[in-house]
Length: 123
Image (cartoon, rainbow, N blue to C red):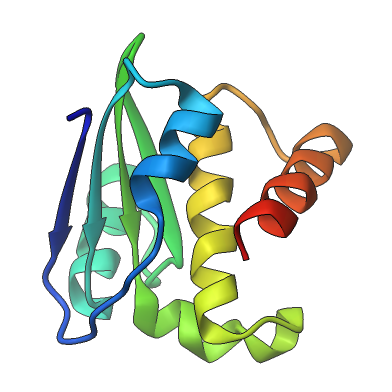
């Protein structure tokens, strides 16, 4: 299997992590996904980006075909309504967003179009 999922939160999420990863990055991409709380998300953001807030998603490429994504469900849940998403849909959106960054995309029209396409497919 080419995905490792770690959940350090109390919430349980039944999302198609592997299917979405394979669709966006391919079956041979080695991915680590961690669902973390706000304190841990803030620590990672401070260490890696020198930012002091808890982010909704962070993604880090590790090698050409390997990377990691950190999702903070607590932050995602707080902002879901402002995006017009359910909590689950917003978490899927953020996961897709992180994967597209690992694929090499930056914020912009191309990324937004792909986010929409994948979100329709998986939500």
